[in-house]
Image (cartoon, rainbow, N blue to C red; front, top):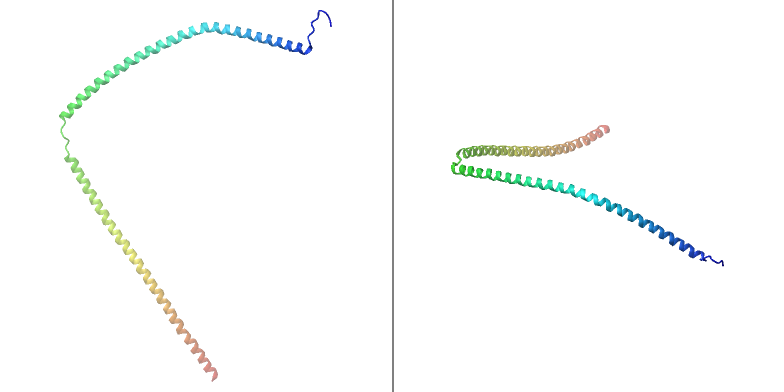
Length: 184
């Protein structure tokens, strides 16, 4: 071993070097953080005062506007109350002086309307009776036509049977006469 030289094994040396570089990086980061914090404090000292002044003026403006709106609302309520009191007085006077409305024209109009309505209902009923009778006549006529058709078909069938039976003996009598004629 050499004298005057500090002997540190290589693995420990690397760990020590890494520890030192990590510590240095940490101290640099800490310094940067403190610098940024100082800048923010300086900026915040100026900024809130300006913002507070602006907000104060806005709050004063809003308070003034609110006060004006309340005064306007009170004036409108007073005016509305005055108008309503005059309206109530006039309505009371009208009710006191009011004469009963004539009901005779209304009753007369109702009577004429109801009599017209009754006439129309009667006409509708008469038309309904006429239509029922016409339907009944049509149904009776259709039934009679069907019945007559059935009778004619039956009669036609019977006549055909009679005709076919009457033709048969003619053929047989003809054959017999032909037979008799050929024998002679």
